Amino acid sequence: MSTIEFEVFTIFPAAIQAFVDAGLMGKAIARDLVAVHCTDYRSFTTDRHRSVDDAPFGGGAGMVMKPEPVAAALEAVSAARGPMHTILLTPSGARFDQRVAERLASSPRIALLCGRYEGIDDRIREHFVDECLSIGDFVLNGGEVAAAVIIEAVARLREGVLGNPESTETESFAIARETSVQHGRESWTHSPLAARAVDPQSNSQAWDPGLVLEHPHYTRPAEFRGHAVPPVLLGGDHQAIERWRRRTACLRTWALRPELRPRWSLPHAHPIHLAAPADQVGDAAGELAQLAADAGASFTLIGPRAAGGHTRMRDLKQLRRSLRKRHGREPQLIGVGQCGPTEPERGPRLILDVLAFESGEPPAPLLLWFGDSPAPGAHAWMALDPARDRSPGITLDPRLAIASSLIDISQPQPAPQAIAALARSALAAMRAEGLLRC
Image (cartoon, rainbow, N blue to C red; front, side):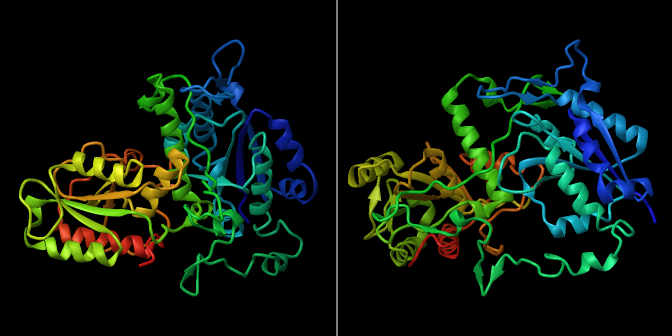
């Protein structure tokens, strides 16, 4: 029987050692079935105070663990004892459960990174770990308790650790598997908040912004091994920093824990307007008008040339001014395009949810722009792939959980498609994702 090794990185190695020395875990270690090594980050600091933390870029409460001692500790242990599957323990990680424990039990060496304070500089998450895990929807003072949980849950699945090997086959969670879809509908089982259907403009229920995972944290140095801190955190614009933090928190939640986001629909009377450049529409104006009417929306042509019988405005500025006067609120201008082959899709629910969470208000009147020409002042660009199945979440690297093309949702992804087909895809996506009821 081979030994499974756990490498725990922490500033409190004694806490881990005390746990693993007791009970069945201590016996398994004595029989060389399990090995647990603890490494103190402070052993890899370079200042006389052995400091492992610093103030966060962009301001805010608490301190952030610096990347240098963490990276140095990982590299030293890997060089001394061999490569390992590296896991960052963080509340903003994917959920650890029995399925994950079973998967990890086949790994010969597992590294567990325990954070403290506000967490570890996100450049470690982005470039030095294989995955991020959370043991539940709560916050602890550090990752040591989570490390102990994972060590015991994984080690007990290894042959010989338990006295009766059949015990692991008949326990809770050993057979039953959760599914994400039941009877053709999403099953939102983890979060009572996310299970509620929220009408953002209902008089009977206040707008609920939902729950999010924590935004990324960074501390000095501003550049670490070629990896720079996001420029917005260095610019001193506190409003821009707050928007960035809210956006990345919401996007990270969409990637890792979409069930935490509220499932709301646009009310029947919510204003939706479609607009397209007259010189690019051609003979499709009638089809676009019909698509808009079927969705309870309106359609406007933009530009000097108008097709007969259709509403026309000189430019988007004039249309936005008209809509603001009509609805008493600035409309959200959202460009619509087709996503490139290597880019993640930005569906309507993702876009509207991020914009609503950023502002802390229910969605404003929507102005969907279809066309190759730029849309000055666009709040976001929806990027669709008509060939993809619709789902409530997005698939991204679970370490970072955000991609640059998603963070900067105000920029278009240039991939041309016929305007009528784009409009059809956008409205179909809004229906499939439960935003439109007609």
